Amino acid sequence: AKHDGRGAFRFFEASLDEAARKRRQMEVDLRDALQNGEFRLNFQPIFDLKADRIGGFEALLRWAHPVRGEVGPAEFIPVAEEIGLITAIGEWVMHEACRHATSWPDHVRIAVNVSPLQFRHPGFQAVILQALSRSGLAPNRLEVEITESVFLAGETPVLALLHRLREMGVRVALDDFGTGYSSLSYLRSFPFDKIKIDRSFVIGLAANDSSAAIVRAIVDLARALDMETTAEGVEDRDQLAQLRDQGCGNIQGYFFSRPVEGTGVDALLKTVFAQ
Ligand code: C2E
Ligand code: CA
Ligand code: CA
Ligand code: CA
Image 1 (cartoon, rainbow, N blue to C red):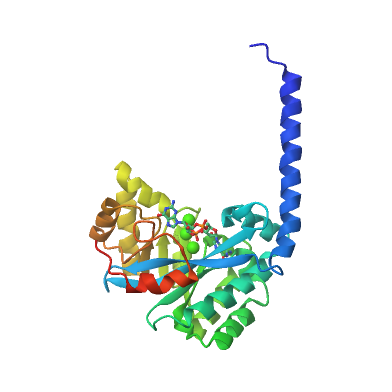
Image 2 (cartoon, rainbow, N blue to C red):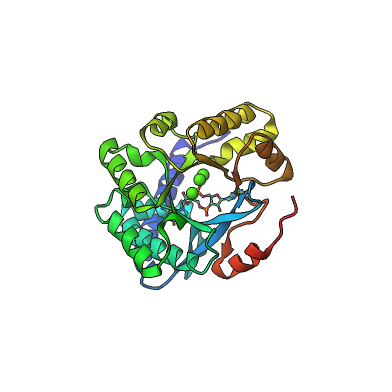
């Protein structure tokens, strides 16, 4: 091929410029998004297989960008973390999530994702206390979802905070379980209320690879440690059947429902799911 190496390099440089420009624009736009009311929460049901009903909802952040339309959290949360905006955004999420959940039936919990930076911020416990007292939500209806990456910057202060949350009655879930480097060691450090089995293992169930054995091992381990399990990203009936066989307690995914707006929650709570 008559390939001009120099030209390819220029093209590469130009697309780097373009990426950097888009990135800077997103930073600028993110700084305004909170004030402009561009964020909202969606809620995805977590189905309790034993009780045969919805046991809770996970709050998932959405950004309605004035020009680009909806931007997903996977794209903007890393940027918000880098520019230190995640603490303020996370505080808004916590208040908004608790406010919504107060109008739900008592047995329905709200799960809130907390980024490592937000979790380690000195004001985090105060934010939770304030969100609970302002909304009047019972602490045991709030479940904080953290990933093992919160431990990377030092385990001791994180464990102390986890225990304080526990004393307040707030529940703690370990998210994306099995994808990190040392998930098992953190199970030894803190008695999480729940383990969320990462979607990659649920996907593997169909491929007939080692995922089924791994899911079974996680479920058994969780049971021995007196922790609940939720499988993420369940998209079809076969996955559901396998997870049920393996004793997984809760199911979350498009098979039951995609994330819905706050106004869609009531309808979902009235739905009888035919499994
Ligand atoms: P996550 O905590 O693992 O959340 C689950 C993600 O999987 C959500 O993506 C959800 O919409 C998606 N999902 C649920 N069921 C299925 C399914 O059956 N199939 C597929 N393909 N996907 C499914 P979403 O809403 O785009 O969020 C992505 C990530 O962004 C979340 O991953 C979480 O890490 C982060 N995030 C979302 N909201 C917040 C927030 O309020 N604060 C923080 N710090 N992070 C958030
Ligand atoms: Ca989560
Ligand atoms: Ca997850
Ligand atoms: Ca995940």
